[in-house]
Image 1: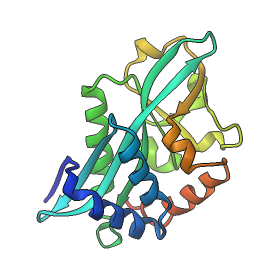
Image 2 (image 1 turned 30 degrees about the horizontal axis):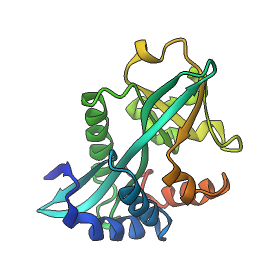
Image 3 (image 1 turned 135 degrees about the vertical axis):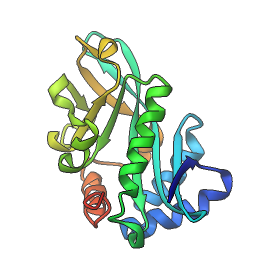
Image 4 (image 1 turned 180 degrees about the vertical axis):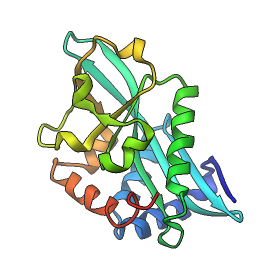
Length: 193
C-alpha cells in the first residue's frame, strides 16, 4: 500500500537519489535541492511503499503578473518522480492527486506545470493559454505550459505572465533547458501513471 506524506529532513538524500534515477540524470535532483535551500514555502511530498520512500513531488511558489499589473500567487508542480522499479503502479497519480489536495487546502488559486498534456489532463490541467496565461519564457511551447485552476473566482477575468521564483531561474538558464526536463519526463516517469 502506498502512503503519501510530507517530506522530512531525513528524506533529502533519498529524494535526490529518486530524482536522479527517475530522470536518468541530475538536473531535476539538483533543482529540488536548490529549491529546498532557497524556498521555505515549498510543498514536498513523498510516496512510501512498505516504509521505503519510492516517489517524490515538489511544488514551489510562482506568481502571475496580470496585464494590468496585479500580482496573484500560485504554485508550480516543479518535479514529480518515481523510482523506475515502481513506475506503472499509479504512484505518480497518487502523488499528483495528493499534492493538488494540499494546494486546495492551502487555498492556492492555481497550479502550473511544464509537462505532457496527455498525462496531466487527467488531473484537470489544460494549456495555460486557454485562460490567457503565459510563461515568462516565450520560447516554451504552449502545449507544455499547463494550468489547473483551483479557484475560478480569483482568476476569472485575469490574464498575464506566470513567473517562477529565482531559484528556478538559476537552474533553468534558458528555455532550451526545458527540453532536458521534458526529455527526462518521457523516460517513463509521466507515461506510467
